[in-house]
Amino acid sequence: MARRPTLMSIAVAGAIALNVLPAQAQTVIRIGHVAATTGSAAHWGKDVELGAKLAVEDLNLKGLKLGGQAVRLELMTEDDAADPKQATSVATRLVDAKVAGVVGHLTSGTTIPASRIYHDAGIPQITPSATNPKYTQQGFNSAYRMVAHDGQLGAALGRYAVADLKAKSIAIIDDRTAYGQGVADEFQKAVKAAGGKVVGREFTNDKATDFNAILTKIKALKPDLIMYGGMDAVAGPMLRQMKQLGVSARFMGGDGICTSELVKLAGDAMADGQVVCAEAGGVAKDREAGMNAWRARFRDKTGQDVVVYAPYAYDAVMVMAAAMQKADSADPKKYLPELQKTQYNGVTGKIAFDQRGDLKEGALTLFTYKAGKKDPIKVMK
Image (cartoon, rainbow, N blue to C red; front, top):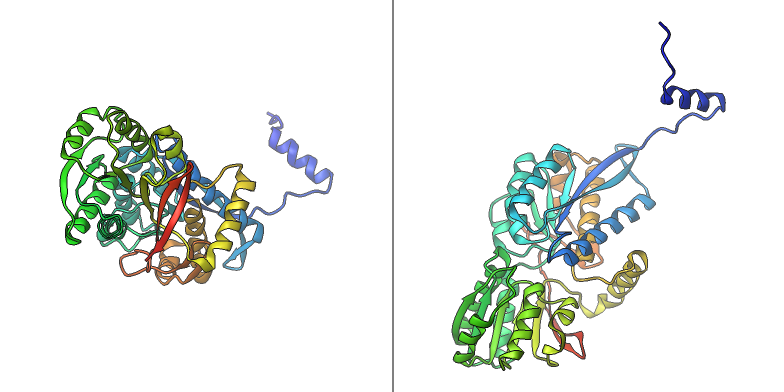
């Protein structure tokens, strides 16, 4: 019985008839990327995803060769919705897809549980944004981060609150996430070490919208500064309710609140100079021009301004690709030793990792807000 011609056989026959043979396909190397691209942290997640995509685009345009063959990078993107359970499910999916490495996750609460899955599979992981110290304290040789951790960030905020802002009485609120509680804990330690006074500690959650009970209790303590460990989606409404209750204390937080989105969320509740925040990252004066040029290019390419961590996701992909090139292989077992020895000059600065996988000399930038815009105070290391 004669076989009926398939669409594929017809296409191949047509190509032969026209003397046009299919070009040899390039080897595709998949790099996983995970962030929260839905939910309250979606603006953060889309930011880092676009940064990673831009790096892959740049590398493919430049052309990569490994083992003497041309290769093409492909970003396999996943959404963990900032949910730890979804994060482990996504991590398993990436392992099954045999990705060569992972850039992500966005939050500490998702990065930490996913890291064990990647480690057990021998897949290198670089987070562009997760700051909880526990991530690199697990002893995993596969775990790396591109920014300073909460120990550095919280400590810097605590010292600044006491020494520079001269805060006499400080109240602390956190959202009980791995990130929020972690940075608040480190802040509290630093305040006490600097001789400051913590008059109260309260907590909420990362989806809360009503803070009247907490703020009423805090108002009675008459703090001159309130520190919030959490994200901008909660900090904005909290600032609005502070104003409604007549709480005029300074407001301080980590990189979770240090966004232009905070201005929109807080509305007219933010007085100039009232909010001070620290971003886990930043460049020295001699690198500002390069970073500004990259940000302008990012805006031209994506149609969006950088939220915070897009350049760190960009550099994470570049660092991973550079390690592959040095090893002349995308096999994690072969390029992981090169990743550990990284000495890379990136958009965000000179990148090298310590024995734990933390960034050596991680920078921090302190900001305030004036006329509805972020205004840098100083870069610290």
